[in-house]
Amino acid sequence: MITTPWGDMEIADAHVHYFSPEFFRFQAEQKGVEEVGSLLGWEVPETSEDLADRWVIEMNHQGVASAVLVASVPGDVDSVATAVERHPERFQSVVMLNPLPPGADMRCSRALEEGFVKGIFLFPAMHKYSIHDTRVLSLLSIVSGFRGTVVYVHFGMLSVGFRKKLGLPSPFDMRFSNPIDLHAIALSFPHVNFVIPHFGAGYFREALMVADLCPNVYLDTSSSNKWMRCEPGVTDLAGVFRRALDVVGPKRLLFGTDSSWFPRGWLRGVFEEQVLAMQAAGVDAETARGILGGNLRALLRG
Image 1 (cartoon, rainbow, N blue to C red):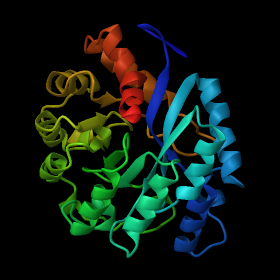
Image 2: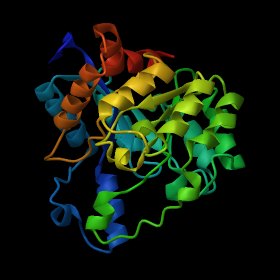
Image 3: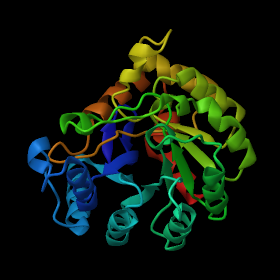
């Protein structure tokens, strides 16, 4: 529990990146070095079990009840599965998938069938594909067969700070970053719930439009929300919450932090900033309870 202006609340974080040993190996291979932890100044976990336990200790310290872990290199199912199996009362997980390589649909099906993964995370701009690609539709057809699964789709601004710090290129393609692209897809898969992170990350208006038209589209509130600098008419985070609540309503906003690496740990500052913004937006206790955890728990129950 965390004490908030509305009382003690059970916090569920919808967006925590799980930087597993496999994640660090992947970055080291890309960089052509033995290890990257020292270059980044980050702790490198020896095993996924160690990392899962580290997150539970951190969440206990911060008062966070549960989190959705994002496997943050394509196909890293085993790492988050280990965390969920080890601490099923604290974690759910989604796995990043690139639909373009052969066998992506089989990997997706296998991950969901094993029961440790609640959905997938798509990065169209990162992997350079349209959300309308037939290989994406194949994945969504698989996901639609599993109750309570979710599909995160990252749209908008995409900047990976650790790649810049490592001197690695990030040749993303912003042509595939508009949430409007999700409209027809969400209508075609009405039983699949989609999550657009970071309020659309610079496509706030478009994200609101899609969510307004599609009741199976949710928004998460995660990250520093620096995209606001590029959004006309957006002056503060309180205004973002007001407009989102006005358009989407109180049931489809999911609190998240975008936490990722240690020793930084859980981003309490992001939580506190969002709580202040919600206060300024006039959010009542019932709505706050939903945004800060209740909505996510209901979504994942299916």
